[in-house]
Amino acid sequence: MKLLFVDDEKAFLDTLIKRIEKREFKADAVYDGQSAVNFLSENTNTDVVVLDVKMPGMDGLETLAAIKNENPLVEVIMLTGHATVENAIEGMKRGAFDYLMKPCNLEELIAKIEEAATKKFKHEEKIMEARAKEITGRMV
Image (cartoon, rainbow, N blue to C red; front, top):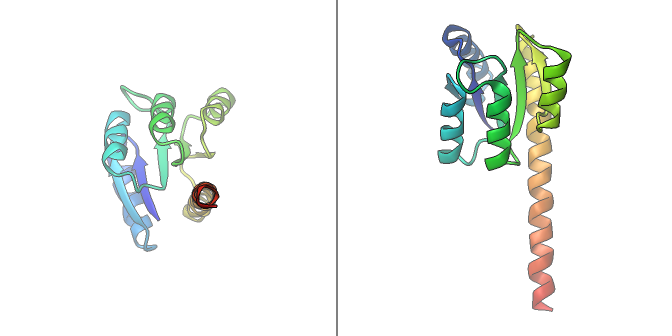
């Protein structure tokens, strides 16, 4: 599983990445929304993005929309210390997998990441099955 974390709080993010990597996950970090979009355009094997909502420049909701537009199968977990019901609803409308409050329990975050990755893998599997049926249907 390949993860990308996006947060403008560098110290927080660097610590979180170290803790995640101790659990044997492969994780990358970027510190703003545009960098996340750029990273994903070059790293198409990313499965789950953990994305902060409040960031300068391109905020989390704008970044989420850009990610889902270019990478619809990538699952995005929104992470924020400033959650509002409106932000959560808007994030879910734009395709977020889930919404967690900072600071979140590491075990809870890992559980959400695993759920999101499972959803992505199942979706990819269904697409591959549909393509295989289409190909074998043409052969008959």
